[in-house]
Length: 136
Image 1 (cartoon, rainbow, N blue to C red):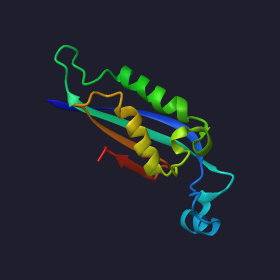
Image 2: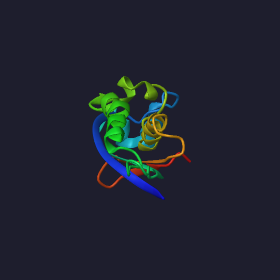
Image 3: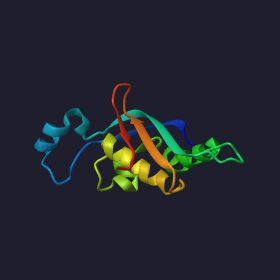
Image 4: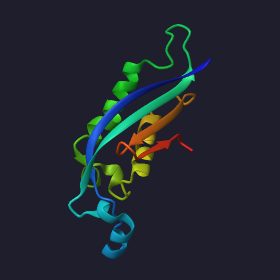
């Protein structure tokens, strides 16, 4: 029997969508107001879902407290109230789009989850805009 557990979290962060190898004109044309040189911020919502077999001894797929601690250590502490472009090493040379942020989060959490478990990340950048990444 495979079951999915999910944990929600959030973090607030600033970013700028910008490619260093493009001209200002091209960055502005592609990224618009998200290319503001003074950055802009979001209140990100995150849902982390883990699917796996239920342990017959505990009745858990994964203890939700363990998942909460992983999210805190891998996402909330390093990203919350940070400028993703300037403060988070993973984005020094990676444009912090919602898609790229979701992949980075997935990779950080994946290394802490059993390999036989499936992992899905849903990152809400706004109430209406979100991305999903399953490691595919």
